[in-house]
Image (cartoon, rainbow, N blue to C red; front, side, top):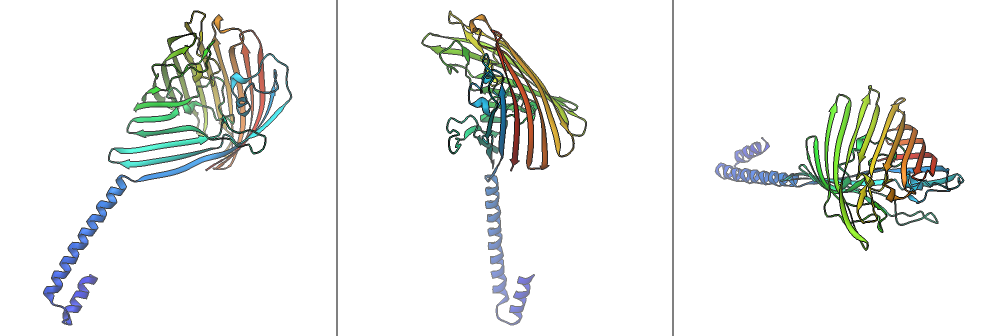
Amino acid sequence: MKIKTLASTLMSLGLISPTVMAADIDQRIDKLEQEIKALKQEKGSATTSSSNVSIGGYFKMDGIVSDYSDGKSATAGIGEDFLVPSTIPTGGDGGDIKTNLHAKESRLWIKAQTNTDAGMIKGHLELDFQASAQGDERISNSYSPRVRHAYFTWDKWLFGQTWSTFFNVSALPELLDFVGPVSTIFIRQSQIRYSNGAFQFALENPSSTLYNGSENPYDDNQMPDLIGRYNFSAGALNMSVAAMVRELAYDDATGSESEMGYGVSFSGKMAIGDSGDDLRFMINQGNALGRYMGLNGFRAGVIEADGEIDLIDQLGAFVAYRHMWNDKWRSNFSLAMSEADNPDAAGTTVAESYQSVHANLIYKPTKALDLGAELLSATKELENGDDGSVNRLQFSAKYVY
């Protein structure tokens, strides 16, 4: 309207010719429309290929006081930072109470997503400082970061390193200890995963842990670990059934051999009432669980005197309950056990069974902050009857951003 009014005024004053003015206006309008159309096309193209990046994670400090029944400390340093069942000392004298403070569980994640002509592509990179091969407590407590997750998804596919498809993460109890139950499946590794509705199928990185071998682990597998999983629900209960077939193999100076084994896992989480309470559980069984269960508390097989591989039947289970006292206080309780039917060739000093109990109280003064205390007791028993335990009190402070 303003352009037309200005044009009428100019023509009434005789400053421009009506014919010239109309032609000029039409030309300018056509040019403007072309520019607007080009801008829309450019904007659409940018939207199609634009990427969004976000960061997040948390800071966590753990204060841990441990009392071992048969030793002064865990048999490997990693067992001081969180419960690693195989590092519980056995057959020795009780040690003094030991205190350990660290912030290694603190983590950083970076997420990216790009909308392309082929569909949405999403990536996830996550780091923390656990199990660091660099650093000590002498001066600066400097520890190198490690990769937890590094994967991307496109359509129904996942490529990269993340939780094994064999592991139902939602069933893991909410404990202050980094891992928790001695019998849980807990493993991340590189994989190619295909998901379609409730079904998931994956080819995952193989590795073999065997007793009586010269290496641990062996990396001589010819085929990847094959895993299938089905997720389903019934009312307030969400469940998962996973099955695995994998090759256990070795190739060293003494010879070479391979054997096929299996594992199955049934797990779930059931909401109780409307307060946020829930019950979580997991049952694992198979002769090739090995490194998949309890942080490799048992190896998957034993190399016999004739070079054959004898796989080890194993069983593990846990149940955990979370109770919301109110909107700021909650508690978690966990009971777990695992056992292995070791062949004689494995020897008498290998682990036969583990048990663990966890109980905690967590205070949430605001959405981003958790303060908690946890008691755990875990035991380890060997084939020769020797056993050992650790009783641990853990304090944690966690800020999520």
